[in-house]
Amino acid sequence: MHKTILGVMLATGLAGAAHAADFVVVKSTDPSLKPGLELNSGQKVALAAGQSLTLMSASGSVSVLRGGPGGATTPRAGAADPERLAALKVLVDPPPAGRTFGARRSGVCPDPATLTTLDEILAVQSSGCSAQARAALDALVSKPD
Image (cartoon, rainbow, N blue to C red):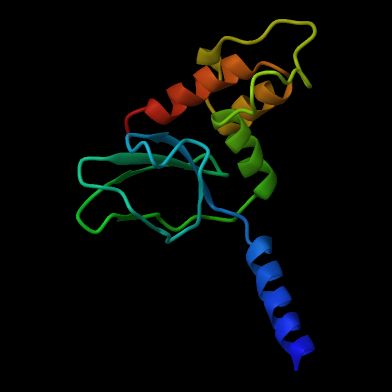
């Protein structure tokens, strides 16, 4: 009996861990919902009236949620891409400053204004131009709809 209960608990835990998030918070006016937070499609978010939350999916689509009396609900997302979402999360919420692993050693970083898609931004980030990638991401999510 104990083995059965343990097996069910383990399977449930693994199933939950296997599901990747659908969105990363890239901007927030609510201090409790920080950039880098991962959210799932259809998830209810405690977002107060007057507050906003900007989300990005792995495909690069941007969604802005506005708070209300009942909070807000994240939209439906397309196919999840855990690797791209993880790279986006690192771009939005970088690791602590003492790490230099992966720093750019040579070459010139591109002008952030030339980076217009999430693919281009993530490629520049992976080549060591994190500051330019962050600036380009800020510009991308700030575009009017």
